[in-house]
Length: 309
Image (cartoon, rainbow, N blue to C red; front, side, top):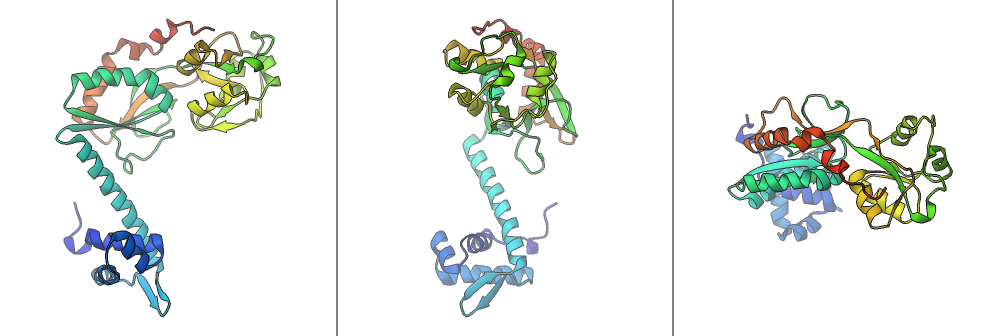
């Protein structure tokens, strides 16, 4: 239920308060909003009268927001951002329904994108919007219908649709390739590159090869794309998924520093809140991915490629 109208300030008043908080002066806020100084002051006075709380402290040198004013300005900024985002989405979609997905960039472009192309062809009345999220987030605070998650079932309150596993291989620039690519210990002599969202990935990989290692250090990256580019530039060895390693190896920019792929712990899944029934757009995607044999199998099509390893 929306609060009574007497508690809801006007958008011009919120814009005035946000601008004063951001710019530090009524004069600067007026210039930013293309208003006069008196118009901004009037909006702030109206807001204070409506709330019954002093938001600005006035002295001979100008004005400054009170603690309450700063707190309210931050809340106003969040609301204005949400409203602008919703307006942009509906303007882009027009009369069509929207499917808003949070994706992992590498998996989203390699595995999910072809399936979304089929989805778009089947549902021309639905607009697809994609955003990048690398970690679990609060669906109540984000405008997403669903998200692509990698790992174990460690996101509470979510419904899960299993999509695919992942295989990885150590890759490096040709000049860094070790003499033996069948000995995991040879990689310990090289700098190892790490992905922020996969803590312990190298330790898990070495454990799969029968080697126990700990406290592996090295450069840290937040996305596979920058991790792979650093490996190409010779900064070290990167543990890359097949979808990224294969094309780079095929182009000769990277070589395999070990002679085979290994499965990662965890899987990719489509997740959405248990407490929120799927929209028509999301339900259609869930149905399509559930029927997709490749989606259930995980990597069947990918394994058909040798990737030059």
